[in-house]
Length: 377
Image (cartoon, rainbow, N blue to C red; front, top):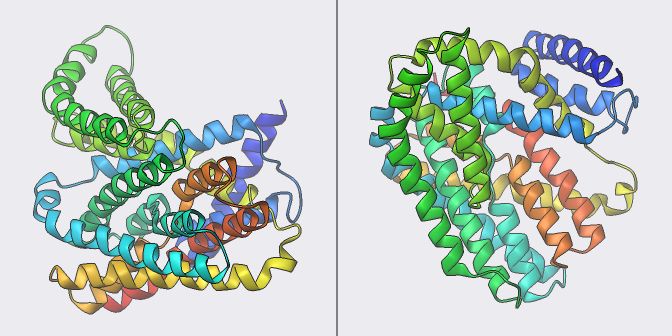
């Protein structure tokens, strides 16, 4: 029953912290992130990281991105393809190059330096999506561009990582990696176009309760699993599933019920668990490294993605808003950091510092977005 108590604590704490954050003029998600740190082992120790909480958190981020897909205007998404490409690539190139330079200055090997650059190039917009929703920016041209850029960023960075790992003599085959991703995206588009509407119609006609929401969740979870299986992040698969359902007659019903399910339990656990997993013991001896890498991570992604948005036709205020939304590295970078420590591309000290840097980028993203998107008005 300990899990039940933990869930009760997380839900009430995240709601109160989110409300307080809004009262202080910040997005609610910032309060939810910070209360996780307070509840976790680093401060009060009320909640400890467990496999069960991690799994619930994973469901939370999948549902969050699924909801973002449901809210996506597909026509606007098509129109922002060029801008998304510029933002995605701009947000990769600058962190990659300057991350490599930082690795050289830290006396890392060539492979380790390139890995550090790739790690800083990663983006996770799950936190940004919530901030965009709170500011009513998710359905705008800027919001759609950010979501499209996140897809591009994920694919390019993972392929680049596979390319790097292939030089290490492992069992990573670049052609196989690329082929699996191509198959996933082609398959996801075809299934989303032809199979999803048919499945929703057939499954919703069953003589049991809540068939529409059940069929939508089946689609969401299958897309997320297949995306993860083929090396594309699960959140991208969930987002594509949401987009596929957004063009059907079931969109409004699915959105209303998934939002209720997600935001009542799973999404609060996701936001709070980010803070709970933070580990600050022993970081004092690496404080200079953490500050330096945090500044580098924030500025390279902000400047690179903002320049990409500017070159694609956005004004400076909108460009900076888009750039700030791409700053969070989130769970994508954590997964890459884990790969790095397992493959000896990161030493334990650098790994510990990187985890804190990822947390810093995640925490600063919502208030940065608030500043830039408010100034845009």
